[in-house]
Length: 296
Image (cartoon, rainbow, N blue to C red; front, side):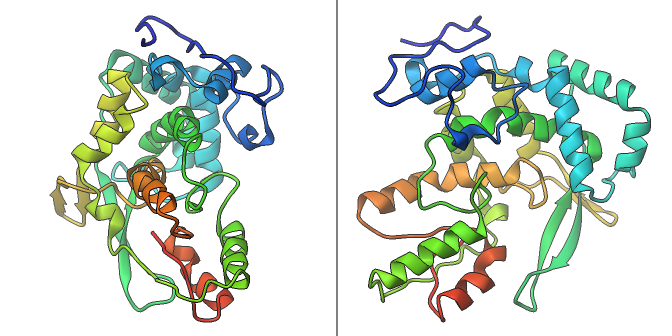
């Protein structure tokens, strides 16, 4: 049985033992955007929605309060201008007009992300460089608003041993897990690094995994537009056939969505793994005295 397409709020199924009532959500959801994730939405998230899929999410993406919070995050993160040369400060000077236009385009389906400006940055701990994509400020706001809506849906079921790019996680919890495994007597360690992972994620399987939980066609179309947006490097431009740009706001979440089945399969086989982002790897290796765990 699935949720009706016209519902604006999901209907929760029976409450599992130990799940808190509305207004008593666990601290693990303290990071969610409250303008999107109301107490009723969080209750549905905790309990599970009928059919396991979420409908009618696009209106939450373009909601004025969500876009306002999204811009605040973009401003706090700073960053350079994209291909349109518009800085965060310039966008803010015409904040009302820019946000209203963005909301209207997201609502009527006319929104299209601009190309990502590609630059190269040094890779920590090596002599290599890696590509970094810089979306426009407008696109960073839209992506942040989309992430505000989608991230809790997938975070709910992510594997316990995944630490990279996740709320309330990161380097320190990963290091504590590494230390705990070493103290527990695990001495055989495989250090696996997925080279150019972001650039190699296949689009169709990734979208299929998103659609396992999200049935709003307009949200899927919006995600597809980010995967298909062009790349500009100097005077050269092209459209990638795979991958999601490093530097894009939505990319870390998408990277975790794609690898999550692997995390669960390894856990089911009894493999003790700690997966984290590669910028944490040098510190993790030092902490493990030359031994490390899997990295993304």
